[in-house]
Length: 310
Image: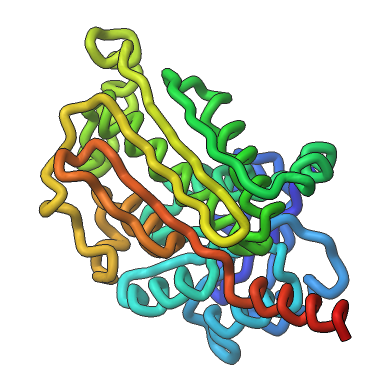
């Protein structure tokens, strides 16, 4: 069973989030009222993900995130954000959080975000052993998105990036989230031409338009083309859709904390937070994302080489 730790000093919001996860994901949820209690639970229990508020008395959510990443580097952490905590939320994403959920949108977004992060952290042990022998690789895909296809592709690319030394476990999860956002943008906003601004309405228009366009011409016939080039130092991902594109200059500023709470631009913000560089072509239907090998992995390899030769 999926085990999730939820940390929040507000009893109401703690119970609301926990109940949503228990009912929708059939998850076993462990509850903590502050960072100290969360750390005690993590020392004694195995959990797959931690969901934490940022603003708590005593040790803050940001401090808790740093300590968890030091002690349990493979544990993904999703953060709760509330109005007024935008700067802290951006700092948490840069510090290694795997995602965020705005508290005011908890009922609408929580389960989807948690499912996405959990999917990005799954391991296939047999595939992991095989991929440990890969040194470099260049791959091209062209496909019409299917429900199972995008998660499978993301997990496969995560494994390659991890086994070639590009990322550690924390960065591996962030890479998965960034790839998911880029591929969904190409599918929904690019090929299907469905605006994210429709998410602002709670009447289901966003989901309904996606459903209809998957069976309509010309949207249904459009494909996504993806190129991935990975070696021991750099991973480059180029994702192109067949939609009309968009005005790149109109993209929201990914460094502006205010954009955390806007329906449009969420994917762009996450991609910029998790990748070293994100560039769009002039037409706006192709994105190139680059991730360089993590500094701590380079230092570890250098240290290992020194030990071997000494």
